[in-house]
Length: 293
Image (cartoon, rainbow, N blue to C red; front, top):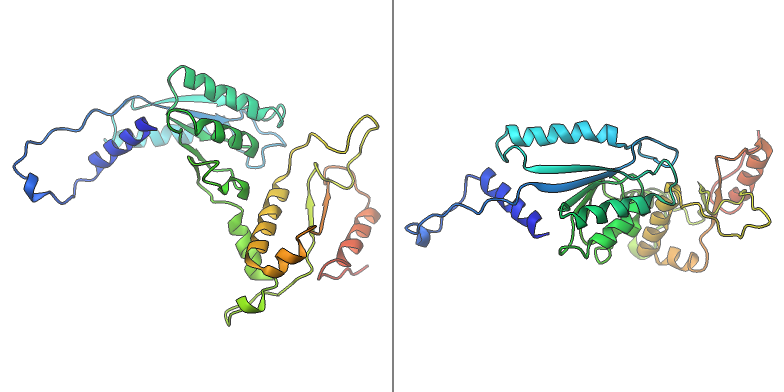
């Protein structure tokens, strides 16, 4: 963390030429800033190739050219000298098994740390690996900064658990706020003249999630718990549920014991009649209507 702050200070010093001088220090001798701790060691963690587990389509092959151009631009602008950064590209192997990707990512980070080449981390295409590595690295060298374009679940909002995580695209909480303003029932004490919501109270979550799917096939030697991970649909709807219960006393009361939901596995073969029956069932529990054609 100290190397990160020192490098940042050097960048600001070299790029900011307009500053107000201290009159009392005008006659004091000027000393050049200490040399930055080059090279700055960064590890990039992404899968080598795409897979069904990679919802964002982010791979090392796609990221490397972008990072190389960014590094060259910094050198061309003379903000930092050549060789200022040492990049390590690590394959998370997400395409092999999503349940083991966080293990491979953590191994790469610990290896870099033991070799004294870990100042910052970029990447991650899966939320589980991101969460694990962020928790672990918060205790290394005073904290290792992590920048990612994924990590949108609201569970990662906690600055106590993930103090050095920076998400470039925000979180699903932004989606939750939009949905609340658009369709959610607003308590009378919170209704304003600008309120344009549809004021729906009877809502049900109908979404894809292998872990909780009602149509999941369970073998005799398999328990109800599955090894499948939660889907992005689940994480986005969880953020909506959490936001609604924070903003509305009514939703907090109605969803206190159970949140209406109907998860299913869209990758399995679903007969047309079965799907129509599902829609009939959920229409009876929500503000929607099912029209049989």
